[in-house]
Image 1 (spheres, helix red, strand yellow):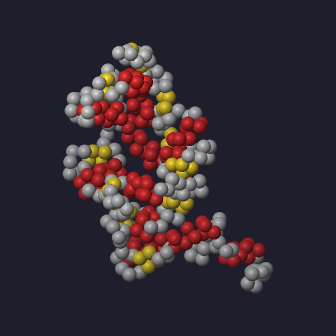
Image 2 (cartoon, rainbow, N blue to C red):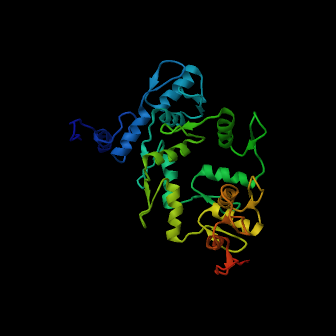
Image 3 (cartoon, rainbow, N blue to C red):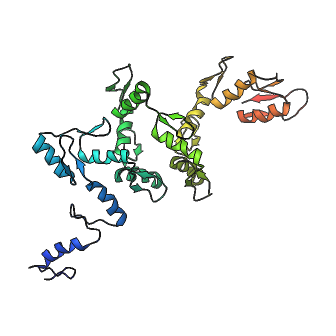
Length: 344
């Protein structure tokens, strides 16, 4: 049996087929894998870049060889430290993925939007935003989530237990990630500054979203109406206007909403809650928008026509009538000496 590519001879067809793998252009010489396509092959090569032992000068292109070296030469099984920051990892593969942060590498690109990721797992979870797939089910309430980590965080809501306590204050959290974010943002004061305007953000994702304002980029476009958005999440919520999906339903009146924040605001109609207080007259409002509009009535020239529902003052009767349409009221649209408003 002879190989057509190199002329090498073998005693059996099985041995020949095993040998022929090395002639595949997508064959990895380091580990013997054959990748599905060129893009996957390029991403795979990142896993074989030399990684240095933190306890000596030796380097390895296979993680398993480095792991064996730690165990046999240094009697060390982790956690493995990052040489560029103070983070440690229980598995070397997690460390290799983490180091892409310091190198600015995001080799996994979504084929439905411009988002990029450090690992294939992050990409898989992200793509479920586009497909709507939520394979992780909560057995207690039936809610579904895109990833196991999201489900784990959610499961904590079914328990009052908060095992992750902050050593610097009396706050406690359901997950280690929540505690880490709290310490970095509140006690350490970690901030992500914008290079264009200097504004600082607590989260890296918030900074990335903000930076799009300076570039004018709105990379996420609706395929139905052409409207563009800054983030994939904004586009996902917008698509519900086209599909009619209203997953958040009011248990009191049955009205449904496209996002939980709208339902939360709506529920205040039933509860009577008015959490937004004017700092001058202490009048409460259901929405911050209404409070801000009211707050402006305390400044500037006096106004004559005041809304009995929210306290907004207007210069003209017609302006008051138009404003009161926002309050779910019945109105007599006559503009004589009095504007009559009958609240339901």
